[in-house]
Amino acid sequence: MAGLFDKQSDLYLDARPTYPPEWYSNLASHSLLHSLAWDVGTGNGQAAIGVAEHYDQVIGTDASEPQLRRAIPHPKIRYLHTPPSLPDDDLVSLVGGENSVDLVTVAQAVHWFDLPRFYAVVGRLLRKPGGVIAVWCYNDIVVCPEFDGVFKKFHDTTLPFWHPSIRHVFDGYRNLPFPFDPVGSGSGSGSGGEGRPVELDIPKELSFEGMVRMVQSWSAVITARDEGVELLPENVVKEMEVAWGGAGLVRPIVYKAFMLIGKINLSN
Image (cartoon, rainbow, N blue to C red):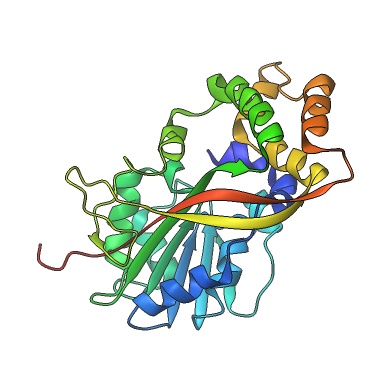
């Protein structure tokens, strides 16, 4: 998937929401130590920046070099390019070595991963006991009744162009494999290895232009365009603009998010 996200790296920088500071303080309260965190699929570093407020060092990794070139500099963060071809042993060494990581975070990305491989690496890296993994995503925005109906109609046109892994986002990570013991209210270890995510809101003030840029950053919109289908023609954008209340209006909106938090089961 790295190549797909290379194409939209410019849009990601300002089109996606930032996550509430209290999320990071809550995660920090669950890890025993605060020496090293690993932000996986870091993109432009927006989650890594929040994590760095609570940990001595953060390693932010991504398979996309264009995304990393736009990463936000921070004295506590070291960004590393980790292509899928990188051997797992090398990845473990790059991040910090076995049993070294206090917190692993994945924002808006874990559904794209080779999950068995990723979880095996997490199992090697997380500090035992005391290490925590948290994965989260959002799958909807709530604006106002007039806009929400129009937006759903547009969203339905994108469905044929999503990668199959997006199903985990659409179902709120309720069926995402997450083989970890529960921590806090966003817990793992469901009967089939799935999680029980906690539902969260991300409030944001958003302009109409910002909303359009967010949608333009969707992988389905990029994929459709590559296949010769324009999902955002002028008439669709105009219909959304009218429902929004005008191009100059800044609205309070809510991104509907969900999070899973877990730790290694030491009894196995």
